[in-house]
Image 1: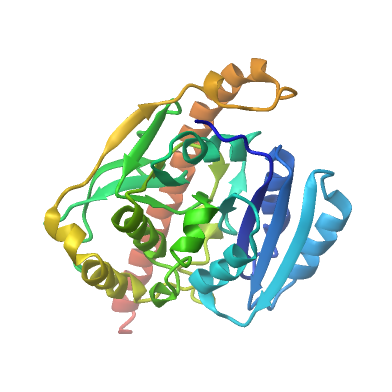
Image 2: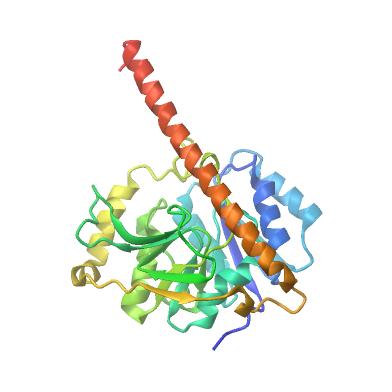
Length: 325
């Protein structure tokens, strides 16, 4: 039975994004059509991110923003900063979005939360990628997956909800009741790697709840990301290898069974419960624009990654030729 979306919490943990914070907030405020609480956690910001964000919101705050809640965190990293925001949520559904993602789809929150409101067996929905664990090759050295869908693979349809072992952030929508029962993200996974995988696996193991991918349009350039930035408090550093091993230990029984639960459910745009005032005649145009945007963003993101690889290699060759180690 479909549960109406009356209100929602939106959480963003932010570190030094003064160049793009207005774009990020603009994407949310322009495209969110549900009354919402905006929860901002400024994690160790030392630039003009916070004053820019607050000034922009003072000038552009939408009428349907219910509460603006802000907190400052002393360099606690993304997992812990996100938990600060999640624990401040009061609504039945909550979305966490990273500070390098500009939402580009009207009514995105209605669409993203539709699977968790429609199906009783769904805990969370992501819009980036979803995949199953390759149980024979999920090691700190390999980290292999199967049946991947999403932006990274350029293979997700808008009319399909892809259920997999893991739906990686971001944005990710959660059922808040089970998020609280699971005691939020496990902060042992800080700074930022595989914490969403852990909680989704825990949701399955404890409550038989699954997670999956449902496409939403947004722009996220690799150059905007702070997870690999050298100056970032959110730098993932060596946590990826460590947390893969943690996943293998914490969820050893699940991995030993080698029983993923992939499924694909058909969801048309016309059945999503957008409000009456929503321009449904624009859905067809939205679907077309979405496919164009999906391709364009995929090309931009992939091009930036390739360029950064070439730059790193060129620097390495230059150091070798110049006699530097």
